[in-house]
Length: 130
Image (cartoon, rainbow, N blue to C red; front, side):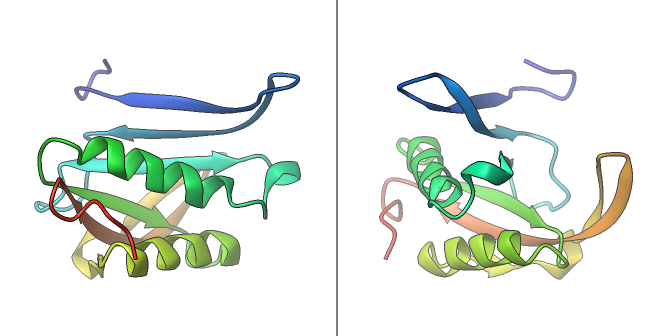
């Protein structure tokens, strides 16, 4: 629980040595009226380009939509090429959409930058990706 409501966070670890590879989580801090959840993720640079973000995002979207249909917001810095690729692939696979009204500034490492917003609807009927 956080000051803005329910949150879910998971740690990505390498099983043989418990090395921290990344984090993924959902919270209710959204910028659009359509989204009920905001998804955020981070993958350590040494663990990138192995599909961890994609696999983790897909697993958590399936988990979140296992019972009810929900709309999830994903934000991405348009200057982060790897992040854009991951988000656009996820949006395409889940039949999501771009939500320009949801664009907003996000502070990362003390720097505030405009992030593009995308929406994905997940639920029992639409939790299967392409």
